Length: 274
Image (cartoon, rainbow, N blue to C red; front, side, top):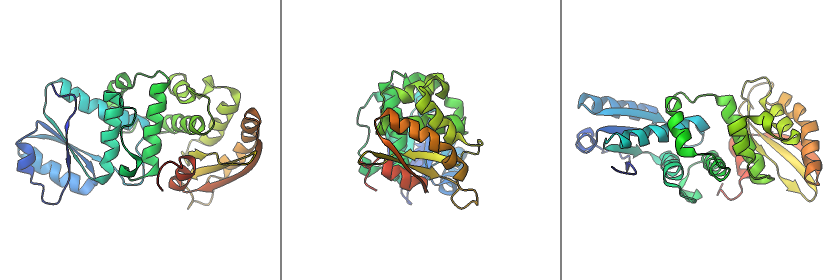
């Protein structure tokens, strides 16, 4: 049994018959339209095929990436020859698979990823594993969410907990939020995460916490910057929790701003080459 699928880069001249000759199941990661055309051709040749639409900039949910790697691994365990055809953003899937099922501490160099949000998602997976979460088991558990995404709000909350852990600590924050829910956290972190949940619309995504001397600022990555409300309700709700979080770390609360999610991720994860 293979421990990994065969990874292959997509190219315009890739012929369906070539793929069909070497695989029982083909997963195409990238552009939806190109993937649908190739998948249809493969199915006509009797090969099982799926398309995993993946944007070069936006990131899937935590449960989607877990479930997708679980689906790949399950087919390998069943003895199938699995081929994953990757467009450029597909490096996220390869890196996530190796992190979840191979235990790799450094699954991919940041330069190979197409978005700071992809880097953020991989970092969250790494923190979950370091916090004691059995990622392979969770991947198996979430296979049904591979293409549906699962609970997007819960995913946002765990990823935001990982944002806080990455920038301020403490260790295990993301794992606790994932395993027991955000209400199991200390009040300072719990109230920050509740403020970001807002009305449940999912407008607030990334939480960057840049420091200037002893001042702790916040930058909310907002999906709704073009909407009249933007993430203003979340920003207002964050003021008191940010002050408490700053005090916990011996800092003073600063400004709260909004930005595109990618920009906020660049601030939160400066090791990614934005």
